[in-house]
Image (cartoon, rainbow, N blue to C red):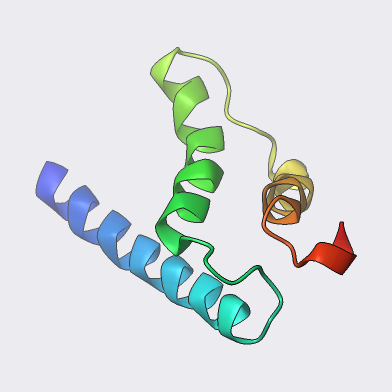
Length: 79
């Protein structure tokens, strides 16, 4: 089961990093942004509460969480 979860997580992560990479190339996010770090920040919001037996963020908070994380990587004029 652990290897199955690992494979699924790795493919999910790879897809997210690719999408973030396309946003960097399109100038939507700052040049030099590390896609893996952005994914770490987004996933940490979900994983950390679970590690400490707390409820994860509500589904209806997803847009806000993504917006808050990505705002830190936006191009200069967008902040």
